[in-house]
Length: 158
View 1 (cartoon, rainbow, N blue to C red):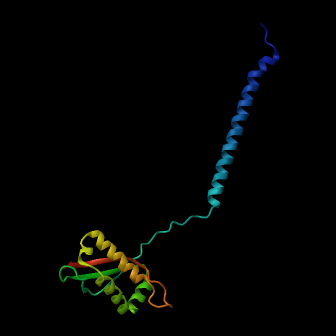
View 2 (cartoon, one colour):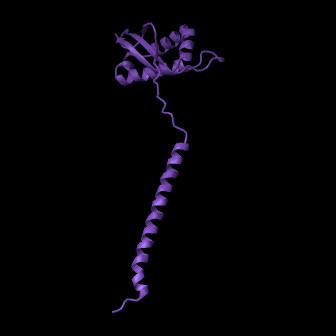
View 3 (tube, helix red, strand yellow):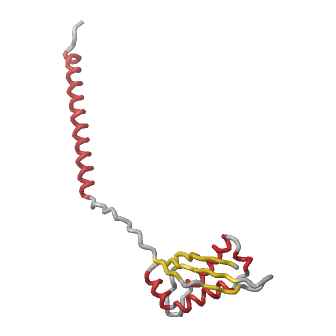
């Protein structure tokens, strides 16, 4: 069996093709890595912002004592309220209108029957009503106050 010159040279050409293919793949891989590096370096650095939690702004009100709506017997409510304000501007405005703030809270509290303040859900509802009452603007040319929550620091029903 004689080998023809064409078949003898095939394995050599095959090795040469493999070598060229491997070199081509390496060049492509290096070009891809270089492009990725360039892309990552050209992007502006994203600064990680530290989210600084704002300090809460609390506004304690003097305690309130109100007579409740007549039921089977005379009852009263003694409650201390602290307001958590959303921002300093609201705190300033609430302080400026403090007599009206106290009046609104008194009206909201005294409009109750003792039985409507017995459960925790009733107290939560009352807290929401106070917040709604105090969130209304004090005059047409003032902005709406931003109150985050109304907390009872003393709650005595007798």
